[in-house]
Image (cartoon, rainbow, N blue to C red):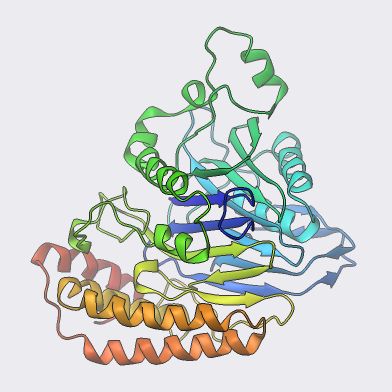
Length: 415
């Protein structure tokens, strides 16, 4: 499950294009932030998650947020300030076990295209000529179709798909998507099949193609309504901190992890009713080509660190997997799981210190240097180490402890 937001230059505080995404996945599905420099290639094909694809002679520099087991990315950006993210959408069209993952399409487009319109057309070409498919989960078969937000410093588009059917719209002010189709009859471009269907009276893309059952239980419409309203209210006030606030939001004011819900933008795992958790978060200021990633789960418990293509640095550490390890993602995860068992006791004090560090990093980031990225990591690592020692024994309900005990055992983690 995921949420993506975009606000265009005419709508934001500083006249910059802002892109943001929370990537929600299974709680042990660590995500890697990966910087890949510009490269030249001699091979004819690139091996993706499940299939091969024709390679190009040169690929652009990218920074990706990639689930540990796949080739593609949940979200990312390239050296030209192009950003793309996808969400799973549930449609009544056949799901293919073989094909190209939406995440693989994101990486392909970021490595090859400079502008949003070109990336949009490229992804459409893949969908029409190759087809989307393959499981989006490393544990079990999870088949779905994709929606995308594609943005560069000047232009942004939403692309929604149902098999090889698609519709797209240029975003004028702001937009958000979640795990539900949103376009009705307001698209600007569409596949030939949609153009034909649109001749029917009252044709509505989302209503025609949505799988009502899965769409309902994913609660994407509720999350999308919230993010859309927050963007609408923020006209001429939306900046990076405003986007951080949205990505850290929950469905209730007095939030408790043991009452987690798929309705929260900042998603906390809660068993069968909330099987996903936010695995990583990204906010990109595309005009300045400054990008913010948590590099860890649950943004309300994390700090956003900046990345700059002019001075590319990201933490060099062990690649994460679905097993507990010594890398940064799992270091933060250990604290997050410990803190969620004592949430009400510590959260107010924790958030005050989190915000103090976040504000310091926001001020430092005006200097676009990899040293600032390193300093940001150093600040958060000290913060994590301090709070890991500070948080006491588990103090939650027996049910909530049981929910996490199984997940922790699967990861080889003892709290």
